[in-house]
Image (cartoon, rainbow, N blue to C red; front, top):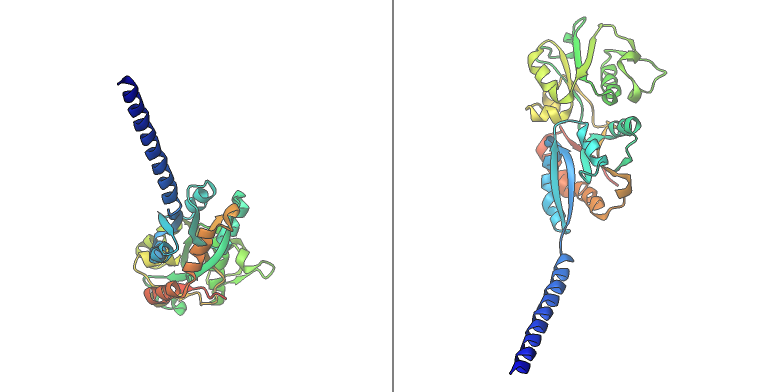
Length: 279
């Protein structure tokens, strides 16, 4: 009798062990079917909105996209370098290059997605001809933006830049001629520029398009003057250099450059955001 009980005990233990092995194998098979997850940092408008539209297209490729929204231009690169996110989508190439020069971060672009034409706004000034002597110009404190902004003012004939300096690298100190004695003030965080548009009614306020859209402004309709579509300031997907060949991140760029997403941008932003032509 004892011998029979011993044999039964051994058989039960063996059966349980076999079940455990079977479950582990099944679990391993399931893990092979799991989707790849990527986390992308983005400005709320339009970048996060564009990413939301891309989510289902990435899901079809087995990629789950998580979006981390930011309201400033510093943290997205800090968090990318610190591996808190896998990529970011908020900045143009000159800003990225300036960040790399300032910080030494090993990050880079893996593809351009769109251009946001920079606009100059005013509550009370309705044409370039109405700009008077000594008008205040309020712009971002981001030096990487200054060459772009000043080039826009030069194109309108309001200033002339030092010819020995590349326009993209120009700063306020490189203004060679300023016939209207415009007063350039560059102490404002980009996200606060719309507030100055509403409070400083006689000033010219230069607002990044993502913040302009967020406050209900459209550069093609509301700006006093605006960049044309030939802008070199393409917004890109940036990643850590070690991840530049990551398949999921490359798929993200391909989806964002797809005809479906390009059409979404065209139809939803009325020219305030312009998709970048791809070969």
